Length: 163
Image (tube, rainbow, N blue to C red):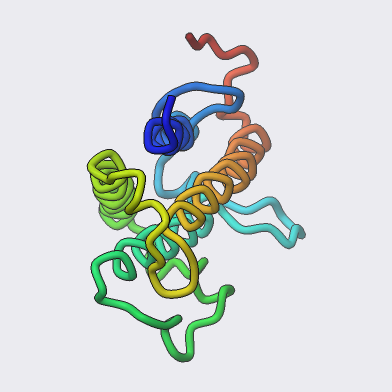
């Protein structure tokens, strides 16, 4: 496999293809808005929805940097702000999931169309390959948190079947 194929494979594994951990899409399958907004009582933990908004922020940011629409971190936005959920309505949760799908697929298509030389191009802050690998690890980390929240809610299957 070349670098592009490995990167695309990692991008797929973090969202919709099974590997060593469940992909994000599987972790979110069947989660309702109320489940997505739920937090364990007394715990300093982000909800599923907050985690998804955080992932969305950084994926959309990569795409904006890649297309030249953003050159610096948005002024006045902190990392904590990226977890904010403005609404708890089911329609808004479904739109959040649709946005996640669109941005993930959009980045995946752009990655698959790259040449090896383009991987070494810098977009503001670092090389494109570094950005993509970082987001893959970021998705894996937060997917683990989402799975744990599903387990705490009793919605994660005791045994999963996967290929």
